[in-house]
Image (tube, rainbow, N blue to C red; front, side, top):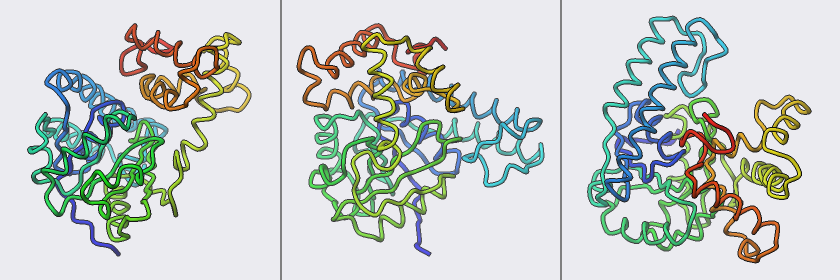
Length: 314
């Protein structure tokens, strides 16, 4: 058994997943700091964290009388008493109160055993972030990226610690869909890969250990083409989002169609992924139609479930 003694964890970014990662990690007893680019970002992060606290507390309360409300990220077993669930609810409040936020690279890095980078899916933002962070990270710090589609080997040279750098990719609603994909690059030391896999277990995740680099990991290799098919039907005006989702849900028994999933992922993330395609810049292409249509919604503040509206209203 590999020894994992992480205690201080910094999460960089508080988007859909960054906020979830920070909250779940604090809930599982780690000392968590969230790094954000500006005071404005801090103010925007606060309602996301408040919302997560509410989701955890409401779901746990429902779990007392409805076993179906149990989420795997809360506890290893669904068979907890009401008193034991109340103890978990206390941990939720403690986690929320314990979260710290900073805009300082130095403060974010100085005591960190692990830093989880969850900033925008954009190399032009990730590379300067890594280069600046490298100035402040102590020798002990392990650095992981939650990038959805980009490979760690593309960024390892900028981190100042390629042997301690790898990917740890979470699914959305991590308290319920509790997978964490662990993926190294050719220069990752196995020791740190194993420590990160143990950390994933420690915060209630099931580590999905990839043997080699794969663009989009396992999950998004399956998911991205599916979401793209939904976006194609919408951008070409073949069907509206409700019809697209209803078709998939009724025909397969799946709980959510692609457009609902995009609302959870966040339209900005999906837009950034689509923009990485060369044809996205070429007028008249399908990819260009998709990014143009997404940009119109983003510009109106229709960013997905966290904003209260995306393809649906919440």
